[in-house]
Length: 216
Length: 216
DNA sequence: TAGATTGTTAATCGATTAACAATC
DNA sequence: TAGATTGTTAATCGATTAACAATC
Image (tube, rainbow over all chains, first blue to last red; front, side, top):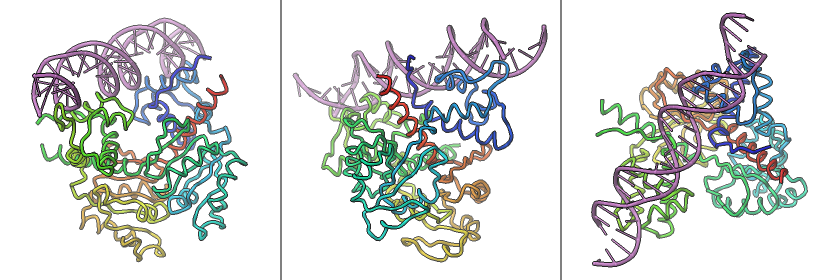
């Protein structure tokens, strides 16, 4: 099978497709078309069909797409059925918020354990997730081999922790520290949630909108 | 002045530039070049110069760029000196994490007040931010006219709250609910932090990396 | 001055859009 | 069958890269 390159733009649209399929099914709509999908997401129908055709042919000419089947395809492509497990490193505010408010399993990922360096935090359970002392992390990683580590530590601790994670076989880091972890020589996947970048973009858009209004 | 269109890609790179200028200055480096910048960010020098030239000419031929001056230009473009204010709507886990761990003022935004519907939460201060009952929100908005609302409520409350914010003159919503707030007819700026989209992209990359390794 | 590096135009590349034959 | 809508190729558009004159 020839592996064609999938652009980042396409990858970032896949979760959007997934969400609207869930919404369609919740509304009892089991059949859709590239036109309907494009309309819901503000894309063109062409683009929707091109995106899907990166991975195969999921529709039927003259009919459209079966929502459930297409949903299952996209879920598969996203790796939602691989049974990935994740550990949380840092159970402070943001870590707590992730455990309590974010439904990992909804996206096919099982959060198995949290770790924190503060003995006032470790030892307890949060919503059924046990928080272990950070010292136990390397051993846990070697024994349980989770694919994903969620890094939710203060900035300062980010880099050394990332190295420890990589040394112990973690495949991907979901990075909530506002620190860049780019270690080009390391073949680890880093997905950043940079709040500041997002807020600054918002600030730019506000500024641009105000300036263009002033000009009129 | 002719307003040229700035692509989203360029806008998303501006905060990255800002961050490395801060890093350079922290290391006592006060002069840089498009080559150095591109190297630090994994771009091409051409692209860096093109990006800056969207907004004007900030460098000196034969010399390069003064880091502090360039930093100030980018900060201005991003609206960091406009004195924007923000209110937090929802002081649950994620709201707490934002108040306690995220430094709004570092990015030129002043968080002035938080609001929550839970009387056990409202009435207190968190890190110097007063939490008011949610009922006081409309009046506060009309009186104080903050540009930005940070929406950190449960999914269910997202849409009606967004409408209330828009009705009361908020210009931009920083959206931490995992709900899409696209109201095309409303001229409000929405910047989403969608954790699930990010995790799913990470899951895709893990899957792609595993499959390509298996194939070899 | 010579060397360096910008600002900017031109060339290339890749992504989006349009078009349409295939076919359900 | 006729109508609809896909899968896929071709055309267009926009973003990135290359090149180089301007100039510090």
